[in-house]
Length: 473
Image (tube, rainbow, N blue to C red; front, side):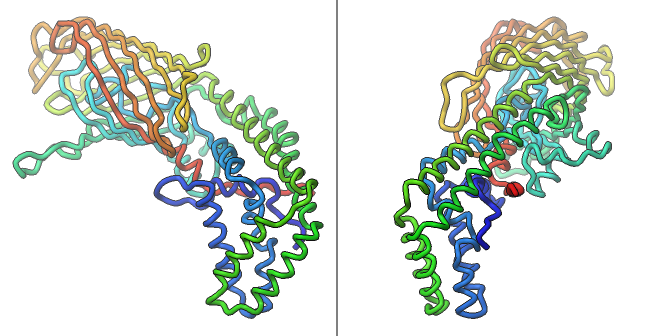
């Protein structure tokens, strides 16, 4: 049992341990969870001698390696263990009520996103919208505990194609007044499907050699450092003495008193005298792990800056207005330190109202997302500058009536800040919009929009238990 199978990455794995609901656990909470697992394992022994064997650190090396690492070092590792993107399309379409955006981004959640938005850009009705957007393959693979890179291991043609598809559904939560039931509450206001026409963000693609180099260099260096540290620890006289004393105490202690004994022995392990060589080896593990995670995240960030070309279809179901369909092309690529997004769309009436044309409006937009140097503890604040030109071909139709003098061109400029405010992908987008007119009124205006988005990819990345790496021979 001397050769451990989780060198180096034990506290990294702890950072993503055991999928669960609720707030993201702190490193200390994760260590506590490992301790409970350790105690349960010791108690599972059928005899005092077997419980003594199960108390050996080799039975749960993760817990004891964590005890060698400081809180600050564990926290540093946890913060790097996340494959999250700064600019994804989480909310509803750019023309829906309740939207906070005037353009649609090209990047979608790999697993699932949730957006709650309130406001109005140029439409005729202010609204609230709840949007769920996700990738079916990502949801299925996320449920099996795969991280960003491992989730691409299935190379079957049908899986490759399905990975290019993502779906969304938007709902109006509605309201109730005078204790009456609102028949429009919780109604589906739109749904959409999008297909990636060009997406080089698959780690099996142009970056495959970089992934191989990362595995051969930083990852192997991390594993080697972990093996070296644990081998060094096993030779410590203080550790040998601690190990023997722990086994003696466990063997003679009744099962119902083991919690207190094991707690005391873990604290003794933390306070155990370690030679400078062992401490230096532990420090090297932390350094090599941070090197690996930093290089890995940097590579993922580079991969996620490659160009995207997306085709999206949206079915819009506005209240008291004819239903329409959007056909939209979205192009996205790097621009200076951020991402540039371009949209070209046509909006069609599903049923042509009297006096109108099939095309409701034509639209073109350009948006620049720029991560700022100002950061919260959860990440960078993203500044968005966007402009849109929308041409109403016939005018606005409400309750099957074409409103006079609503035909024309609408020019919009928007400035938005997206602020990450909590772990687990919680962000607040706040935007201000200037326009030459709205759809209903030909007067200049300034409007504000606010929303709340949950990038559940980020939450899942923090919670899922990645498969332990194969140790070096």
